[in-house]
Length: 58
Image: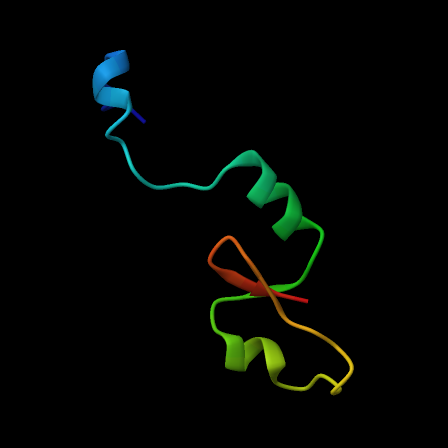
């Protein structure tokens, strides 16, 4: 973290990446996978995999 640069408010709007606090909170309460097939592997038919902020969680 030595290469930190100051970013102006106008340039901050163009920064992409990361997840919002709501997404992080939702993913922390569930077990999440990067693909739908990985989420569905080993679960019963009654269980659901939900898409939560670009991850599949159950």
